[in-house]
Length: 82
Image 1 (cartoon, rainbow, N blue to C red):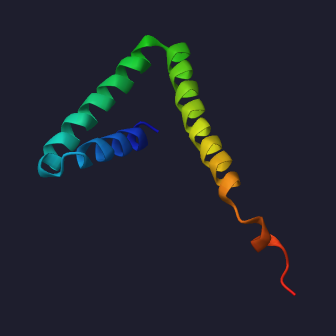
Image 2: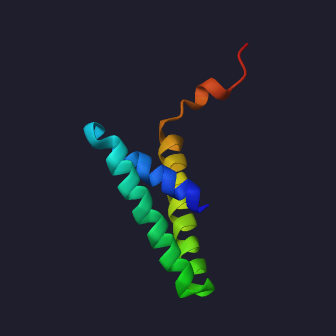
């Protein structure tokens, strides 16, 4: 999971400044790995809380997307054609 978070965050952050992509990617990756290592050193309880917060954040984004999509669905397209 740490590798996934590291790659995703570093790629997104580095893409905000394309001319420095490699350097920025490396710096962000080191920062994220250091942050996750510190979190693990603080203990399992802290790691669990942080993981719960991250999962809750991701789920809230998915729920938001679904709710927005429900408002723009053309429901007539879901009925069988004659």
